[in-house]
Amino acid sequence: MSVTYRDILSAAERIASGVHRTPVLTSNLLNEIAGCELYFKSEHLQKAGAFKARGAVNAVFALSEEELDRGVATHSSGNHGAALARAASLKGASAYIVVPSNARKVKQEAIAGYGGEVILCEPTLSAREARLQQVIEGTGATFIHPYDSPWIIAGQGTAALELVEQVPGLETLVAPVGGGGMLAGSALVCEQTGVTIFGAEPRGADDTYRSFITGERVTSHVPDTICDGLLTTVGEQNFAIIQRLVSDVLLASDTETVEAMRLVWTRIKQLIEPSSAVALAVILANPEVFAGQKVGVMVTGGNVDLEDLPF
Amino acid sequence: MSVTYRDILSAAERIASGVHRTPVLTSNLLNEIAGCELYFKSEHLQKAGAFKARGAVNAVFALSEEELDRGVATHSSGNHGAALARAASLKGASAYIVVPSNARKVKQEAIAGYGGEVILCEPTLSAREARLQQVIEGTGATFIHPYDSPWIIAGQGTAALELVEQVPGLETLVAPVGGGGMLAGSALVCEQTGVTIFGAEPRGADDTYRSFITGERVTSHVPDTICDGLLTTVGEQNFAIIQRLVSDVLLASDTETVEAMRLVWTRIKQLIEPSSAVALAVILANPEVFAGQKVGVMVTGGNVDLEDLPF
Image (cartoon, rainbow over the protein chains, first blue to last red):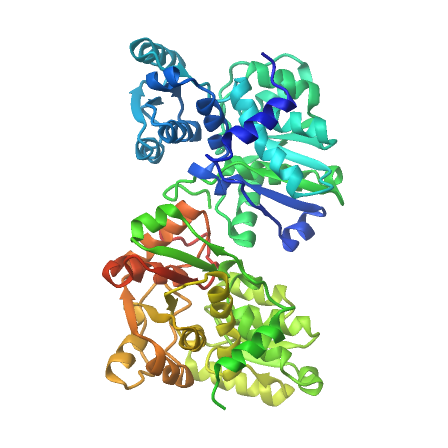
């Protein structure tokens, strides 16, 4: 099944009772600095602190009663794990989340806080997949992929859908890309509404950029960036959409991303995570691309570790 | 002249074009933790990042053309300096801000950023007052006191005025107290609207608490707290109002305040300063006082130094 704009409209209806319609924030000061009109779609104020709530709720709410009885499972070291645990709890379903043993304690606590079962594994890809397979065989739970699934793409796309409703005349949208669920979902909305869309990626995890310019999807790399939500390589279904609909993938260094994050923290007093700030960073690094336009900035999440800040 | 509720109504009209009507934020999660309904009046989203914009605009907008031609002056190591510089710039007036030489660079930059003239002095009370006197004699500028003036009290009171409009049925309000302009202005609104009001003060700067229980205003102390907006002793006019109208002054340790600040940062993703978090800290420390009530929390500002965080 290939995901379409109509799936995003359906997702918006399906998830309405389970997520926030998040606000759009603006700042004259940041507009002056950027030389364009910025509209921050504030998914850091989303349930569980990230847009991941959208895809997770969409995937869980689409399951049958019988599937819900057996629960859901995934692997995640980030926001998807907590989002899926929360979505499952809304339906009284079990959630089994395989987490690498080196994942941050705060992420594990968030999963457990929503009633999810944290299943630790060795921090390797093969250990993670083996453990997940074991869990699924033992429980019959449905695997909800963190990013490369039509349900997830359609769910994440609902944020852009809200944004184009909230900002009439929006011309451009910039969304961060890790696995690519958010960027792909946003791109489908932008195609339908005539908005130009760019991906934003850390230089230290530039697999989508390299995939985009060569046309060959990069499937493994060794990321080196503080954007801990963007470490994964781009998913297959997501990349097909991105390749077709995204104007360009722009890169930012971690230094530029930290500076953008500092601007958002100090000027609009919003606690956003580095993986979100990369979108503003590429806008500030490429003023000629965005000059004078109405630009949406997808702020993907606000889950930061206060004990480990980059300032 | 003694300030009244009517002065706050007049101030609200006077300042409307020069300040934000700030939003009220809520969080189910924090409500569960606190055992009451919390309504955060978000003055960290105010112009210049703090409620001080209200009093400063009220004082400046009330001046005659002739007075504006000569400019305004004050001493400040904190948010009042930037707020006054900004208010003056809205009227094209000069602002002379005497700042102790050990004040944070970020505060000096904020003043200069709004076109104010930063005048450094030795970091003692006598040096500050002497330097301010000199400036006033040299320029004819009008002195705008940081907190102990009817114009300032009336201006700061407009935040509580908005809050009681925004939250019908509000039962209680907690506001931090330093010089006392915000607490006094809020108390006048609460008297009129039947809301119980509490002051919140750091244990390490408890002059208002001690003044309140003895009836004798403490006029000098050696504060020891991270709440750098609450170091000053309570003003004379403010204390008279506080003594008459405030139910109690509650204290929080810096440890409790940092924990409250951490909750607001991580749960509602809002960057508030320690001097603001003390209000939530006293609510969490005294659950029996607030249980089940609709409680307003005056979030006074969000100007933090990211190079010097307490986490």
